[in-house]
Image (tube, rainbow, N blue to C red; front, top):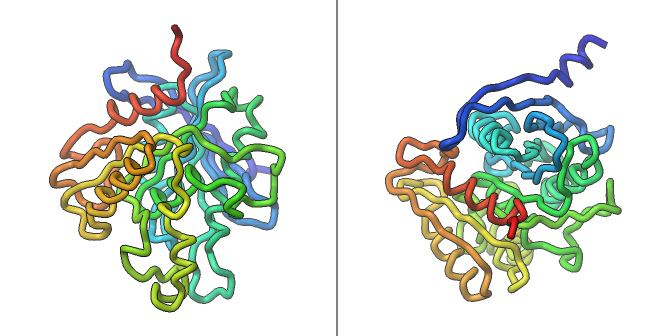
Length: 287
């Protein structure tokens, strides 16, 4: 019983985001959002309850589809920043590539991300969640998966059958932080267990531009010029492709920023930009 209590422990964190006064944020650790046999868990970042419904944001960590954790510094920074401004945030672990296992991580990692969106809607009452306004944000490989959540539809054959299959896994907007979105034009990915030359159709299925159409949600893309892991040209070319499809987007290039940064890199405070983007698309405007 004690271990169970420790796993679901709620914490209170104080922080200041943007120009706002310090706000209290509730954190619930190690939430089960996948079937019982799965070991991956999620962390909730919740605004202090005020009786109102709040929009939601799914947070997807990076790590080359083979590493990373839900409560790394970047994910904590994002979760606390957004929850302090009235967002219900879920930061997830998902299936990672394991070279010693026969189970491929794709497309199960995307299924896990989509299941997390469905879990949020299925638990809307407890979370005080506005189910009609959910966004997604991720960094690096998490940026790729966040983008895939945004642009893939059931017709693409990449929606999981369950659990929570009665719930939608669609989102209203995407924040892609330096994600390798077009792996066909990038490099061989170990998580796909083969080269681009050997598995072109798999790499095409794994690439975000494959699924773009004019009905896709708005994108905010963040990328640093000093990124030596995912070249900034990935995001620059992605913005061009989004334009060609008439998809609303904004590309923010951060001079001197490296590959991995959160919402407050030393080069530029990105909180106002990210919050304004989510506010625009997830908080209904009063006319």
